[in-house]
Every structure is written in C-alpha cells, then in structure tokens.
Amino acid sequence: MQEQEELPVYRKIAAILHDSIKAGRLAPGTILMEGSLAAIFGSSRTPVKQALSDLSERGVIQRFDGRGFVVGSAKTPRRVTVTAGLLGLDEANPELPRTWAWQRIYDSVERALIFHSALGKFRVNEVELARHYKVGRTVAHDVLVQAQSTGLLAKDERLRWYVVPLDEKRVCDLYDLRELLEPKAMAAGIGRVPADILAGMASRLEAALAAYPKVSAAEMDALEHDLHVTMLGYCGNKEIMEALKRTRCLHFTQKHMLGAQISYPAAEPFMAEHLDVVRPMLRNDPAEVEARMLAHLRTARAKVIDRLAVFRRSFGGSDLPYIG
Image (spheres, rainbow, N blue to C red):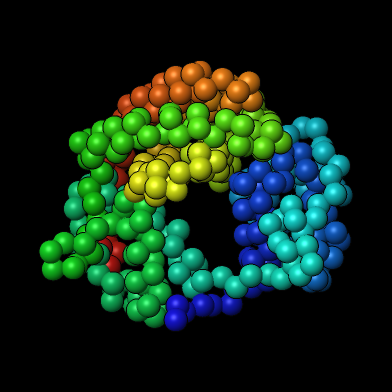
C-alpha cells in the first residue's frame, strides 16, 4: 500500500483552491472570502487564511479591497457563489482529501531533474533520494515513477534510474510527436469543451497578456495547463493523452527555468499564441484550431531549444547526493 502523509489543513485547502483555479472552475475575478470557504471545508478561519495568504504570495490570487481575495489578475471582480462543486468536492460530503507523501517533495525533485536533463545523462539513486528528503524508500520510488511518466527519467538495462538528456535531438523528436497528435486532438475537442471553461481560459490569457511581465511562474504554469492538459483532454482519446504525457517534460523548462535561472523574455512567451487557439475553439472552427495549434508548436520548439541553450551556459550543476 502506498505511503501517505497528513499535510497541514491549510496546505490541503491551498492545493484544492489552486487546482480549481487551474481547471477553470474558479474563473479570474472570482472573489474568495475566508468565512464562506471555512464553511465549505468545515474548518476554522485560520487554515483558510493561511491558504489564501500562501496562494497570494505565489501570485495565484490577489487581495481585493481589504475584504478577501480575487482569483488571478482580473480587474473586474465576479460575485459568484463559491460552492463545494466549484472546488471539485462532493457537495454532500466536502471532506479534505489525504495527500500522498510523494507529492510533498515532488516539485523539488522535478526541478532538479529538469535542470540536469539540460546538461546530459545522470544516474539517480533511489536510496540517496529517500535519505536526502528523509522519506521512506516507497515514497522515493513513487516520486521517480511519476517523473518517469512525464519523460524526465528512464531505466537502463540494469534497471537503474537515469535522467533522460533533453538535448536538441530529443526536443525535436518530442515536438515531432506533439505536432502529429496535438492539432488533430485539439480540433476533436470542439463542441466538447464547455463554453464557460473556454471563456475562462481566454479571460485568464487576456489578463496575463495585459499584465506581462508581472505574471508569476505559477500563473504561467496554470495557463500552460489550461491549453495542453485541460483543453486537450476533451479530445476524448485517452491513448493520445497517454502518449503525450512523456512530452510534458518540455513544459518544465518554462515552469522551473523562466524567472528563476533565466530572465523573462522581453516579449510574452506564449499567451497570444494560446489565445489564437482558444478563440477559434469558441467559434467552432476546426481547420483554424489545427492550423493555429501547429503554428504554436513550431514556434515553441525553437523557444525551448534557445531556452535550454541559455540555461546550459548559466547553470553549473549541483551537488545533490541522489544525482550523479
């Protein structure tokens, strides 16, 4: 049985709110108030306050006129009644879910792996990973299996973990796969993506375009998730989505490198291109969706190759005991 770890209540609440924002259930401009959220979660106001403060620091929400927080960077508040359903919870029994222990350390490990993938092939020691983070061997294994599913890791002939190098050849191979699958899959989602979800995505993209470069890494990651996971997932083909999972490592070059190891580019990196896909989705225009999606992927290929080249010149590696 997989090991679990009880996280603080505020972190669970923050995770639920963040996931609901990324999924488009809580649209930009939605007002979040401590009292109503505490009532939904059946908690005191203290963990809700901590959760909102955490999301505010990460740029996912903003303070609103001293009476709560507003989702995203939208300037026009939306007075919508926030329900358990909007948070992805059972309306009749909105219990806070348990959190798998591997999720607590995954982001940190993912960041280290994507950094090293830009530099070459490295061994990853499962035992040292467990020791470094003071977790059980099962938890360490779960982390590495998750990283494997997104294309960051693989196993050699002796079943040892290693970081898969993200060199120019592999970037191009992964984009070849995406260009074959994503445009058709995106067009197949026309009529299946709820109109309010599409409108929410467009609104978030427009707000980010107007605010750039004052857009947090968390917001940009959520925008990437909107198009390449949430929206693409409506294609109705699970095999395509499973095949594309291994290309997710390409998104991590932006998630972990931009704004941290690499400065934000002068021009916004993808918001306008995403809008060019979302708008014809709203118009039910499959030919335009395919064309815009393909154009976006071809542009993104060159950006990722350039981003990795800049990163290699600036990052000298690390002395993490589990990578070597």
